[in-house]
Length: 131
Image 1 (cartoon, rainbow, N blue to C red):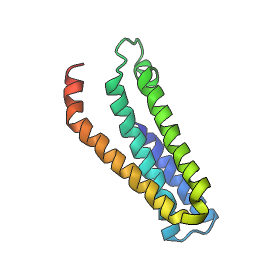
Image 2: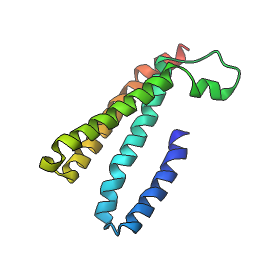
Image 3: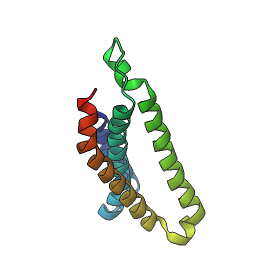
Image 4: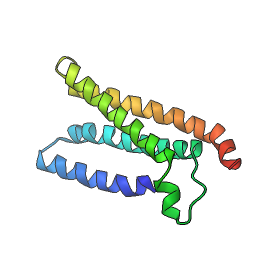
C-alpha cells in the first residue's frame, strides 16, 4: 500500500520539478533514482519492523498499521538515513559533488533493501507463520 500511495505522487512531483527546472533526462533520472530507492527501502523496512513488533490487539484495521513500535522504529530509521545523507552532503558535498553522492545514496538504499528482502523472504516468512 505504501508504494501504491507514494510512487505515483513521487513520479508526478519529479516530472513537475524536471519540467520547471528544464532538467535533461539524465538529470531527471538522477533526481528520481534516490527518491524511488528510498521509498522502496522504507516500504520494505516497514514490513520488516511490523514483523518484529506486531500489533495484534486492535479493533480497527488502521490501528494495526499506524500504531506500535514498528511504525515508530521505521520513522526513526528513515529520519536517521535522511539525516546521515544530508550530513554527508553538507560536510563533503563540495568535495565529492552532487552526482557521486546521489549515486552512493541510491546504491546504499538498494543494498539495504536487498538485505531486508533477503531476510523477509527467508526468516521473515517463519516469523509471519508464527504470528
